[in-house]
Amino acid sequence: MSGTKQLRLGAFMRPVSIHTGAWRYPGAIPDANFNFPAIKSFIQKLEAARFDAFFMADHLAVLNMPVNALKRSHTVTSFEPFTLLSALAASTEHIGLMATASTTYDQPFHIARRFASLDHISGGRAGWNIVTTANPDAALNFGLDEDVDHDERYRRAREFYDVVTGLWDSFADDAFVRDVDSGIYFDPTKMHVLDHKGSHLSVRGPLNIARPIQGWPVIIQAGASEAGRQLAAETAEVVFAAGGSLDAAKAFYADVKGRMRKLGRDPDGMKILPGAFVVVGDSLEEAKAKRAHLDSLVHYDSGIASLNGMLGYDVSGFDPDGPLPPIPETNASQSARERVIAMAERDGLTIRQLAARAGSYGGAAFMGTPASIADEMEQWLYEEGSDGFNVMFPYLPEGLDDFTLKVVPELQRRGLFRTEYEGATLRENLGLPRPENRFFESAGLKAAGE
Image (cartoon, rainbow, N blue to C red):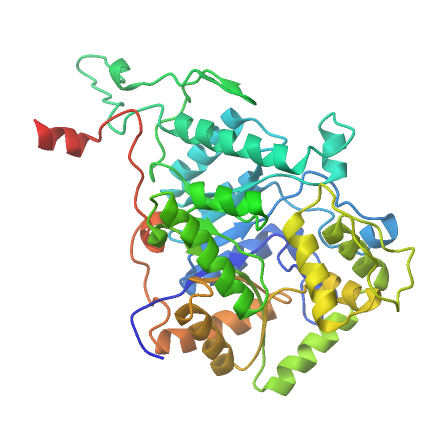
């Protein structure tokens, strides 16, 4: 294949590896998920490789699993995203800083303020991953006895997005004149009071922070259910799609970007980045051996807990060597549930086999040499299965080093990935436009019309 298209690459870094056995792998840093010097070295390596962004998922509870699985989990303790990303902003210059923040158990003013602060601190590199939280343990931490209904979570999320982006537009870009001679710090005519009163939220505003450098931090979404796809089509600029087969990825890509067109949005204004678990070897056999050894480190107690979490239903009482039973609808993530059920049906997997995949990551996986991995990524890009990938490393630091020092140079050699950053902000590097302020004409447009 040949052309001018280029991949966008994010790094999924909380947990630093999604694989349950990662912390036990030979040469891995066991406490990497809670080791600031290690994490700082990881992001600096990613920036040196010209990655678009460093992405942090988040959980609002100790993970929802039995203690026999929890005691084996390297995600049981980890940094709060904004605290960590603010610290990492001072150690980097170009790489984007993306964080998950829940619309279910937080308030719009908090979210708007934190992301605006991070955007200013980092010089315009913040991104917000909009999530609706489905975790019974999280509900208990916020005064509820059970999860909020799935569709209700998404209705609140849609209104939440409107409020947060409205708060980011509280001030015109040129509101802060800071005129020392006159003593005028800002122009009150360039401040907007949101005064939002909706079905789920009531927020007066304005935000007590100047408009973010990017206008708005980059908007990210990861839901794959019907409601999640529609929310993405209406709001998202980056979508972290669930990994799967290329055919499934192409169908998702066409569906979400088709919805954008119907809404009058430019499909190029969204980058779809499926999760990709990448294991690199000098040969395919070596890569397979690495993956096999890594998977062998997943205890059944961990795998079955991960499987139950993905299904939103406890199957630990069924025969581990039997088929998956019928799984009822729940308030859990619908996309994860559907992906597991489809995998079980397609591959004829037992519960034990599904548990092993759930604990070791069962989504899209590229395994092989730098050249073969580059071949697959190029195919996904040119067949419109993705605009790039949210790369998941099998273990750290070796897995990260394998990708940045071996795969990235191969992608660059083929012209599939940048050798230098295009701009100063995350939006510029992703090729995304800066949104106009909905309440104020930009200074440039106003001047042109005068």
